[in-house]
Length: 275
Image (cartoon, rainbow, N blue to C red; front, side, top):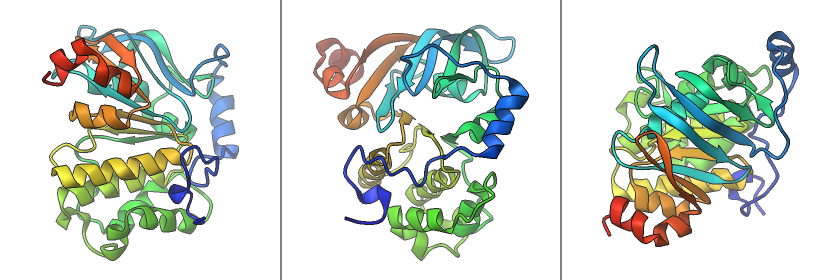
């Protein structure tokens, strides 16, 4: 069996790239005095979230999304359904006026995105997710900005996961193809050793072949035990790899189930998958 945790069977508990805690996180706990949430929660949950941007109208309406360890949870739905908004709400980029966000049993609803990164959230936005003038390796090093340990082993794991990045490690990231840029963005997020990885439309603008490769790599990350929460425009392909899936319509939960269940649901197929 390979020493790289990404290469092992699904559900492997070797989380050497995940956040192991430490004094930095404990200091944040003490500073913000976050309370523990109810038992039995999923590892990550945006629970009954209602909210929107600034003082504008609510976009989310009692929306709930969640992910367990080692699970791929996918958010799909029509354009304007609130998919990316729900993701950003979980990451703290907009106001949650009602409901809560909890990570590993802890209420983090009022933490900033920066504080959530320290807590263990890795977030890859859809656009502007790399430093184009920096090399591939410099981008990965930037991903390790919160770490105080030796991160070379993690970088080796990223290069094993995305071999093309090792070949192009000294090349400016802005010179890469769209799919390679997305690999850099995911790799940068993994350099933080996250407890959960959040991806906002990771396959937007890439070819079907590159999309399949990215999905394969996402599956490998989930095998290490990291929960994946992903917004995806390619609904059918995303549902095929989803352990859990949420269909949003106008900021509300319309359908929830496993990927296979929603693929087999006649209403979901008719309304969102083209029959």
